[in-house]
Length: 180
Length: 180
Image (cartoon, rainbow over all chains, first blue to last red; front, side):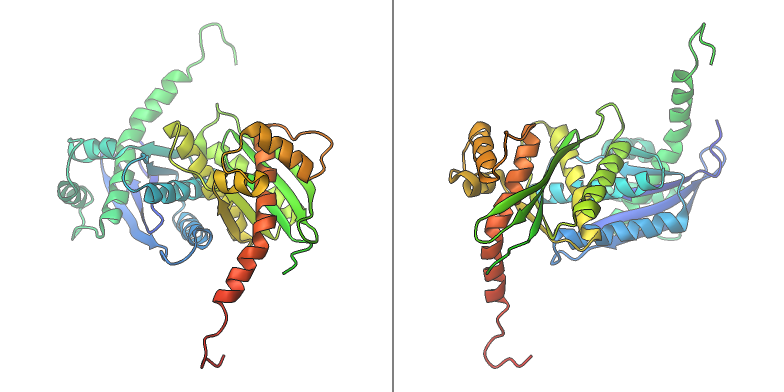
């Protein structure tokens, strides 16, 4: 199954910093960088204003780059409680932007992304940055870390998408005796 | 400070069931029920579709009832991890709807709401339902619990708003020597 031309938006969700990327799939495992950036919202502003800023920015990205699919990091309850909640609120807003445009959303855990990109589910940030720079043929490592993570998410989906498509095709095969 | 006529939307956030209410403040502590309901999204649907349904419903409520302010329950990390995350995603989407309309959002913990309504921060569901039914002069107790909670949140804000307004007025008094 060839997904040549598939445009994937990778999102490393966050309220203070949200990494965004767009990667285009080529033939086989070829992947090409289209855009990468980080949306920041001021910590001094209230939640209402910050979510609106984030939503406006991701809407602009989606309208500018017209991704076919969104790959976003699946978040877990760990670390600072308030940060986790803020990130979860941000995920709601980010997923909504995709939903409003009919763009499907796939979630990947950090270890799924690490495994896909580096072959090691426990790769550190440095290893991940080296790998993503090499895979996308970038002239220098993407910065900050959120930008690199967003690229890794998008590439992870490019490589997982053919498998997911095959699985979906298998499960949607009409059962014997069914006449559509 | 009289907030006669203030329209408060109360939201008990959730993805499976989200309680919504609109209450109008009268003179003093008088409060009048305007609307109450529960938005449900099917558990079988994916997160993307569910957040879109929730967002569309709350947008409709806001456009129909034109609240001046939103009071929403502050959520904590407790209970089932996946439920908490779903609720946190829902909060992001709900707060965004208010933000897009320039409606300010206030968050209250469950114990703040219980204290305001019943005088007891640890009141149980039954006590809360009795109190909210009496306070709003309802002919029967609101059902389900999410609807009652949404009403309690709105009444809580009606009663806290004059205090918050006085505090805001105090902190915005120009300092001596300042000439605006």
